Image (cartoon, rainbow, N blue to C red; front, side):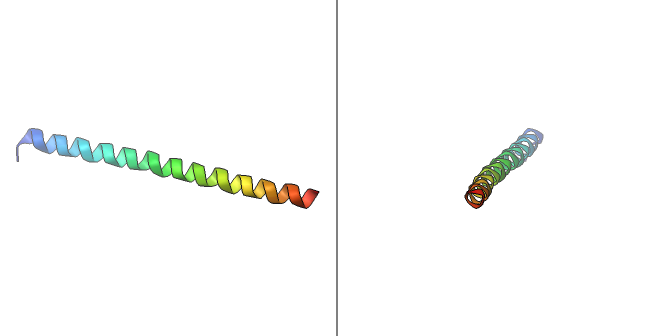
Length: 48
């Protein structure tokens, strides 16, 4: 394996780690939004 291949593989790994982190954060924010909506609905129905 040449030096260039090694650096390319490292770069690719870095990219995937970065991409994975973004996707995880998007999933978390999505779940948080869903939970927040459900909580809001429960609170509103209790106030009625």
